[in-house]
Length: 438
Image (cartoon, rainbow, N blue to C red; front, side, top):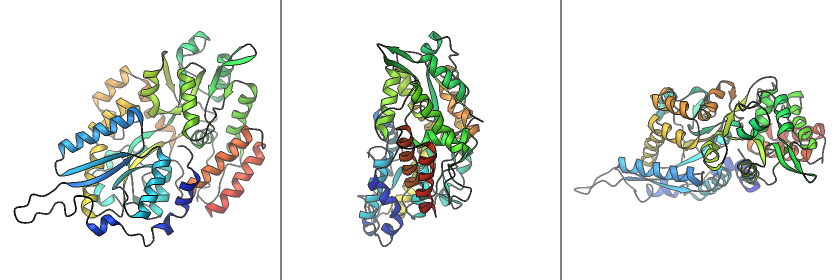
């Protein structure tokens, strides 16, 4: 959900041109070390197909991915998956783009959901419909919005999330507030006021904190009854009452001293907000459902999770990443890659992944399973994001959106830092973005 660096953005903008005429060393040689895999010559034993999998989650979530890959390899003797951590979403994307250019791209990788359109438009992704025709109905429909581009299936949901409001329930109770959290923007403001504390003329505890990030801005625009793009995707639609409302909401609370905009860019700001929350320097934060397990284990207080508070309505963008197969991989690797993608997103693995991370299960069977139901009874926070899907929408996917969201975030931050008024910032974002969108 975070910002790309400019080199990655430049790669996305020029990806179509970059791919034109780009050959693949894998294609030329018949694959990785398993060239000619699946074929036997005389008495020679067939070698397993080797595929490269690049992923973008570190820490305990990354360790879980490694263990799941090992389980796949142990149970699929004809396929060997080589996992490699490539940094966060944006670092991984930049490396994938560079690898495509060099002809040594992975066979499978994570792609943040808002980037599917850019990669698909550049013909970097394999059309998965021929592979998934008999299995696509197993996935939760609300998580498939960012899987299609121009009516073709290019991605399968894996580590999927929505933003949530996280609560220090102990702090809320001590302040005489409902430990289930605020239900509206107005209540969020009131809670933030009551939770904020000062010592020696300085704020020691902020009631609320959130990075000034596109994902959370998208949520608040949806909650205000608006949308980021026009229906045809060719114009930015945020210079409106709905687009202005989140910016005014944030800046007013910051000026009042009850909200902290954490310093730092990209994931750094998110990390600051989460650390402040764990250290009880803030009472409430916005962050991903994928942080549920980590925050619950790190905090020494009762952690709560709630819907994103409503303005005119409830709403949230879906997020996280999908699994994709690269189009330039040889056929044998593509087939093996599909077996891996299908296994990683199947119900048993989806249940395991969800209960050990906080990311949402991606199959209908997983959500309806007795195992998940029992887990939700003991850990109800983990069901909040699934219930919030009723109000969720897919992220914008037009190819230019990765650069457009950078423009939006820059202008939001200018307004928050009093370098521009809300009207000036939004108009500037529209003027710059519409050139790209057209």
